[in-house]
Length: 155
Image 1 (cartoon, rainbow, N blue to C red):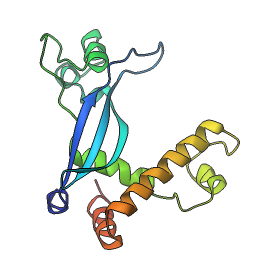
Image 2: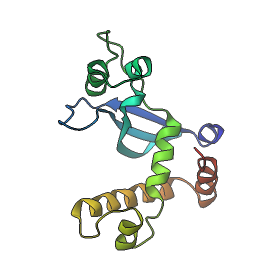
Image 3: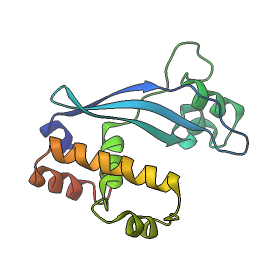
Image 4: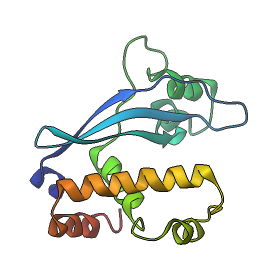
């Protein structure tokens, strides 16, 4: 997206190797550093579903090869080729979504997003989303944020 280039937004992504818990779908996971004009303004974990794994795009099914790619970050059948990192637009879209609604009280936010307002896990998620919103507000003007939100409205 042009706005990302205009605002100088880039990311660095480091794959996080992990095991998939029994009964859960495998996911690709990265630690992402989000930068504006080369300067980091936010770091967070970013996940993508197994459909983003290169092997899934070939097989169109969840296979042991897809699980291996999701857990190791290495393209199946190679020993060194890393799974491609997430697109900058995907990461920014997620950050904008996470930041939305964080000016609401926790109880209202929890109800609007289907979380139990008595859940400590939900409260941690809310606080993480507030931190994301604060990082975005520190880095971009209100007009720039509005422009990004408009650009990603149908993303």
